[in-house]
Length: 343
Ligand code: FNR
Image (cartoon, rainbow, N blue to C red; front, side):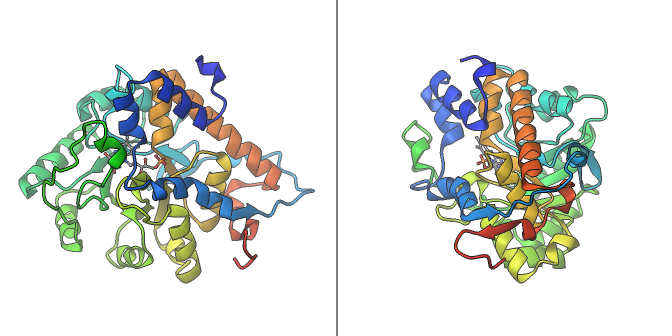
């Protein structure tokens, strides 16, 4: 298929499935168990409806799409989530991701298990481009320190510490394609003690990626974490863990002040601009997408750029039809659950 045939994010999944070797596609697409969380991440958005308003002047809307993440300015409230093995999708691996993010002014967060080294990714930066680095706990603190030193050397602006991967997930779909179903490397707990140890190794802000529960969000505030990232890892870790949208709703109901106290990001199942608007309505500051950009990267940098542009147009069209004059004015008064208008 041609790039111009791609008119929404799901089209890139379809194209990648047709084009890539089955193993490569499956690595990107797989999720844990019966993939209920994977599906729920996408389907949960349908449990929320907009309350559109008419007779609003939305002509200035496009000038309100930008945001800041930990003090850095970006053109749009969505970013490229960290995802490993870029070479499975394109011979230039993550080049398309970092370059498209640079062209469009959005954040790219490099996975610790990216194909391209951290130096190779940073060599591709546009002038002034801000990159974050995802971080997994290593087997030893010496290795952690070495990873931190590497991050500091290339000029990363923020670290996303992944906290939802004590073990690899039970990704059955992938096991069918040769990823080892019986391997068990033992468990690496990311605890609050570990977080404090890591914080002492670097001056960079450390975001916690993989919050799935209100209490952990409260603990993050209490421990002075600069930002939390609601995520069930795209449903790849624990089957039937909640979607970021559901967790955002729970935080909103029980501790809405958290959205003011620290920055909150979210990902999982976002495929349409309307999905983004619903997360922003709860107070989420910016959202990530994993698979859609990996599939778009099968077309290289132009594919990823097109995916960003398609999504930007959806966000802006949907916000206009919602009657929003300013994207930053979005709040829960614009949405309701399908069951009842109890928000
Ligand atoms: C991921 N994700 C991920 N997360 C992380 O913290 N470190 C990593 O190395 C990876 N690797 C990775 C590879 C692939 C192929 C995918 C699809 C995902 C999770 C990722 O950051 C994000 O949380 C999810 O992808 C969001 O869900 P969607 O957008 O894919 O539905």
